[in-house]
Length: 157
Image 1 (tube, rainbow, N blue to C red):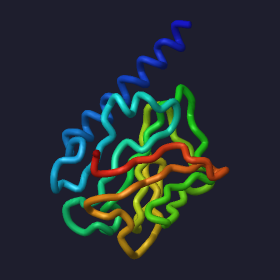
Image 2: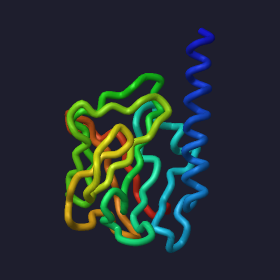
Image 3: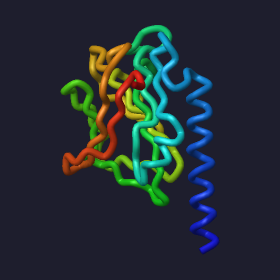
Image 4: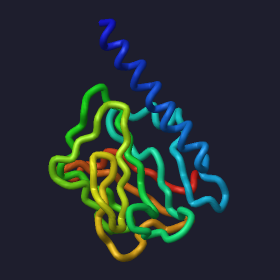
């Protein structure tokens, strides 16, 4: 029982840290910033993966090589999640996370529509056009079976 409790506490600390850093980078939808963060109380409601943040209008080029607009997925589960075959859907555009993709407990994964080098922290889909509307949109996380896991609408209502 103490190990399970420690994992739960560690998970909450990691999520709080991610959300604190995200808030420092733009908050929960600062007017005109193009960065939208899921409020902590909403994030804690998810038992598995969820969309923690949408950076729809970053400084500079939205499709900058190795950067640009992106979505941050976080893991609230107490175990690593196998995300092979999962995808994000943005206005009918499918952004695949790839085969064999996993996300560890308390960590995040950035999904970039543009080009760059995919690694354990980021997936680059390789599109040559923007996908995330700068001001308003809906991003949906779906598992390999096509079941909706999480939905993120921005800006907040």
